Image (cartoon, rainbow, N blue to C red; front, side):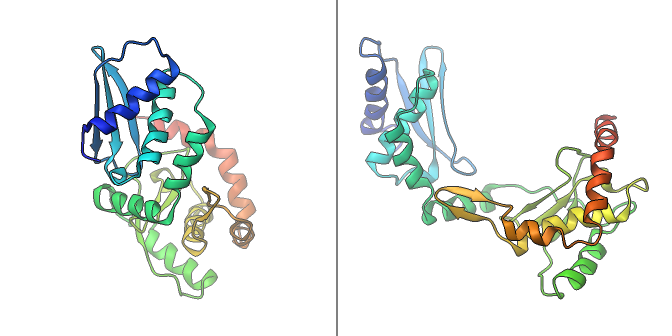
Length: 242
């Protein structure tokens, strides 16, 4: 559907009238927008309703567009989302085609901040190679490794499959942090490469039973878990210090 088409606007007018037949329909501006990923927004400004639909959903069939209209309007009006609409829309976006579109969108439009893998204390490249030899027989392809731009404490590491990157919190690059703690976090993110996300019935499973079993194979798994638990407040304090 083209941006701002009468058909597209008509779907949102229908949704508003369904919830409130006596409601005076305000001007509605509906357009596709190059969001990163499958995101949509609906807002009211100066009495006008603005709807922005992810560009990758431009070819979404009319039935699914109608379902999305009901979902967005119900959220705007704080009404219950119709179960049928949610099911129709969910079935569409969880298809392989849409997941591939979302991944490509993140890859082409997303931006990953890369600093360096060589920290003040620890070298992520060296840690990766050692773990790769010991636990993966040296068979894992090396991703981009980088320390985060800022110190964090809630998330100590994450793997970005779209950009093939492992980011480790700068909070761990310290003489006060045992090496086995850094190794444990890197190992955890390497397991995300070894055990890719599983999609089942529209849900994502990042930590499968197999993932958890392999995670406990790390020699200092329990020690690292205890250290992080005991020191999370200290990491928080350091992260918030200017």
